[in-house]
Length: 178
Image 1: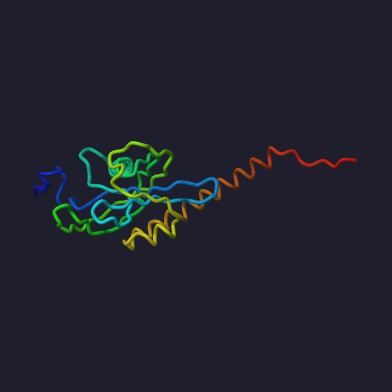
Image 2: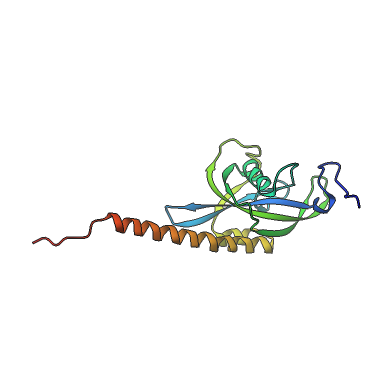
């Protein structure tokens, strides 16, 4: 049986409405909190995460990483394993509404770049998990924010414990003065 392929993208039709997204986060070390990046969509201005269509010869997590750089100007470490998926309806430039499923990958942001492809075309906000979930419309994306929040907080707690232990090993014990 022959597989039907989109002439525009060389992507099989059964994944033509598949997109790949990056749920971008960073650790604010001054406040010991996790912050999440939201960007506005160009078409409707609603809050979303960086995402895009499959790219020839690119793995899903690499597409998510590229979209994060192009749409939001962020670089970091992307997780190969998907965090999960969410569905939404994309409004195309011609007015068509297309149902899409976004495979989402976590991306820990290490660096912000000044010049990137879509600079000036969107709004950006670094927000708490609760605020991110309140701003996005998609129920499954809301769940993904809370899912990664638990993982990030657990990792942050481990790091704080390690720092405390390191500090305890460096600071000399107090001596009594006679």
